[in-house]
Image 1 (tube, one colour):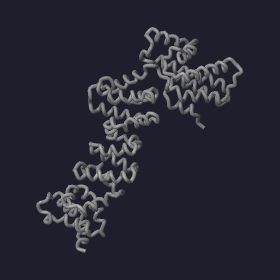
Image 2: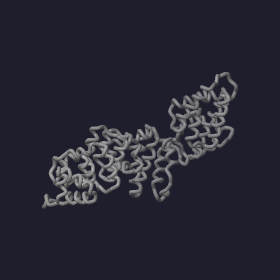
Image 3: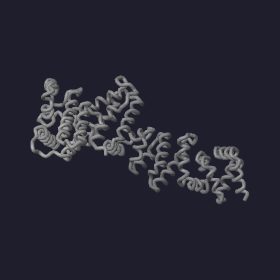
Image 4: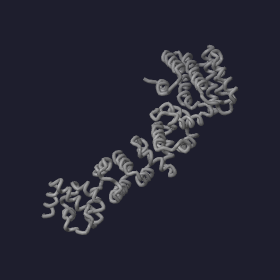
Length: 411
């Protein structure tokens, strides 16, 4: 059975020495050498934090350059680095954003490490190693150098600046840093800074698109996904949500929205291609309650009647085809039977799309009479001819429909 620590090592980008230490720890654990396993994992924890200090490209908060250089120099000493790194983690000059409770836990681990190394009588078994592993899995990614948040924002800003970063540069490496640095406490600050980055750089549509792609990319993380969804459902961020829903990769985000947020979206989207795409997603995933579906269909009919939606658009056609499984045919039948020609004429695109389905309602004499009458241009002289022309053209294109209408009318 695969252990959690093995999955952690595989899914996180660790320093190679750190990864090797963890692998040695696992080998020892599986052979029952728990003291050796504990030491290897403890040293791996310190080595990974040491690597972050040595690779850090900025001056941490609260330190001057001399202090920072001195700290790095001490960590390069092969004989003393472990003691110095321990002090850096739990000491008064806390260069890492570590809570007091975690510091106390690291002190306990230090005691166990010494017991393992010096043959003391402390009992070290598999449970002791697992406690350390669970701590590492839960906390190591959160051990970030103070000032790393602002460093991260600057890094994202550079990533979005086309004069500094190629357009096709993947976001994967920065994404890992975001997941490790951003948490519930600083997420609101991160979100606000991210969506306002475009004010610092030359504004271009492609920039907005890349910010949207970043949010969609981060949505796949369990913790950040929930935080992003919470912000997107706020009224102030509706435009950002609209931009996300226009993106072809927005499905995971859309599926997680609440019913009120979904309703707000399909009532608000002004980009008609995005509207049709979003409605298709709603219908395919069966995301609404029955009441909401009725309101959605009414909204779709309103958009079609106002000529907002292009019936010939493939996405719109897909949307209308998906609606056949709902009660839209009944609503159109009702519209044809109870409305005058002018109202039906304004819905001619919708009417023609479902003409074959309407004809299938062969037992409704009132409906069939109206359909037949609409195909007779002489009956509506002086009216706009869109519906008349469309009906005649459709009957001419599909003679079997004309025969069905004519036969029922004659009957």
